Every structure is written in structure tokens, then in C-alpha cells.
Amino acid sequence: MSGGGPTAGNGRNGATPAAIAVEKIVKKYGAFEAVKGVSFSVAEGEIFGLLGPNGAGKSTLIRMMTTLIPVTSGRAVVAGHDVMKDADAVRRAIGVIPQALTSDQDLTVEENLSIYAKLYSVPREQRERNIAEVLESVDLAKWRKAETKTLSGGMRRRLEIARGLVHDPRIFFLDEPTTGLDPVSRIAVWEMLNNLKKTRNLTMLVTTHYMEEADRLCDRIAIVDHGTLVALGTPVELKQSVPGSNVVEVQFARESDAWMERLRALPDVTEVQSQSAGVYRVLTSNGSQTTTQLVEMAASMGEQLTSLSVQNTSLDDVFVHYTGRQLRDEQVKSVFIMPQRPGGNA
Image (cartoon, rainbow, N blue to C red; front, top):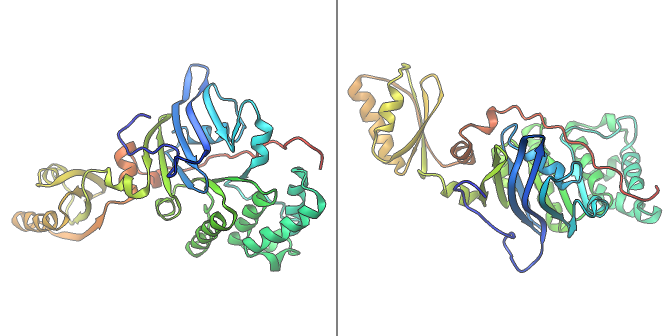
């Protein structure tokens, strides 16, 4: 692994086999190397976050793990099966939830689930039992006969998750699971995913561009940039790896090119980020002292502070530290293709 971030090996319990093991995986398109020898593993029952700006290689990584594109070199093992040598077994063991809502709007909730279960050759009796169970899990049992087009956005997202569970997968890949949802629905999906993890012993790999989502949902997070893994660890470990334990956000009434240099010169300041005109994020090892110094500096220069706040280091700061940009500024438009139908007849 390249980069200076925290690292972790086979999840939090090295005694059990990893649900996902990626070893020095490489993907080349001609002379272009999209993924450059990335290695990580995901423990059984873990929610693992994969973050990265556009073009970082995370979508390519997921497509290799879900058997959609071949691996150039290295190895990926999912649910104990090599993605190159036993792709069909991998497809049977995983559920994939794309970012787009892909359920047929003209079918009922139950019909959408039934068709998907048939594609995975789930026997009829088991199919009916599985549909009832997953509808209860995502709190859609009362709407099983409702046409999908009548559901709200949050309910449709829950239907997508139910569809991905109907064949009893061991590992769940979720691409931007709460994109487009309102804050209340987003939190409801987080709670549901945490509950599914516990009740169904699911392992989940999640991509997201919501830092709060990664912080609250994921046990560990990997940050990918320019095809390499630049940081890997728990949210707490990643925050601790960033120089400066506090962030002071300050806004000056008057914009000046000199502010950046003056802020960097303050004692205990480790990094200064320009947010917008006159607004700066100051990473410091002593938030209270830096705040006092900022007020004194502004007063001595006859300048006015429009706003001043102190907060702990966030995952936004972690992301900027390792990639040099903010994830929320990236327009995430990944296209997630559904896995091919596994062998067998419906």
C-alpha cells in the first residue's frame, strides 16, 4: 500500500478468513494503469467503506471484485472464490445494489423480487420464504402488492436493497446507497443497513461521497486516489493520522491574499485550507490557543471576523489530507452495471 495512512490487514479478527481479500490487484487499459497494485481485506461481518474522487480507481476495483471486468494481475478472492477462476460462484455469493434505481416501476414490489430470485434459480418455496423475510427486514411487507411507481424515493431504495438480498448473499456491494434521498430517509437507510448486518451477518462494501455516512456506517474505510490505496483504517484511526487535532474555521470580512500566509505563521497550525473568498479551515494542535490568536491578530490589524468556530478533525479533513481535494466537490457519477446472471435456469 502506498501513502502514509493507517493500515489494517485481515479485518479486526485475523483468526477468521477474510470475506474479501484483494492482493496486489492491477487493472490496465493498454498503457494506462487504472489500479496500481492495491491490497486490502474485508473481515466477515464488517461494513467497509471505499472512498475516492472521480478517476481514482474505486469503480474499477468494484467491477473487478464483482466479476464485471477481468483482473490484469494480482488476485481478488470474494467469499472464498477467486473472481477469475470461479466467477459464477462469486456472483451467487454477492448482492449488488447500484446507485441508480433499477427496479421495474410497472411491477409490484413482490413481482420485482420474484423475478430477481428466479434469475438466481432460487426454488419456489424458498423464493416465497425469502421474499417474505426480506420485505420484513426492509419494512416493506405492507407494500408487497403495491406498484413500484407508487413508492417514495426512500421506499424504492429499500426495495433495491431487498432485491439484492432475495437470493441470500453473503456479501453486499452498495454503490452510493443513499444518493438522492432526503436526510430523514438517509438516516433510516443507515439504521436499516446496520440492522441487516447484525441480523443476517452480512459483510458490506459501500462506496459513498457523504462523509457523515462513511463516518457513521463504516467499521473501516479505504481511500483510493490515482489507482493506489493512500489510507486505510477505522474512522477514528484516520482522523488521528491527520496532523492537527482541531479545525478552526474562520471568515474575514475583507478578502486578502495575505491571510493564508499569516494563518500558516501562527504557532500550532499544521495546515491551512482556503474554502472560499475570505473563508479558511485552519488545522491546529491547539484549537483554543489558535482561536485566541486569531482574534488578537484580527484586532491588531483592525480587521473584522465574520465567523469563527472550532471543531474536531473530520473525515473531510482526512480526505483532503490524503488526496488534496474535497470529496463533496467531486461530482460522483459512477455507472454500476449489474452482475451477469449466474448459471442455472430460472
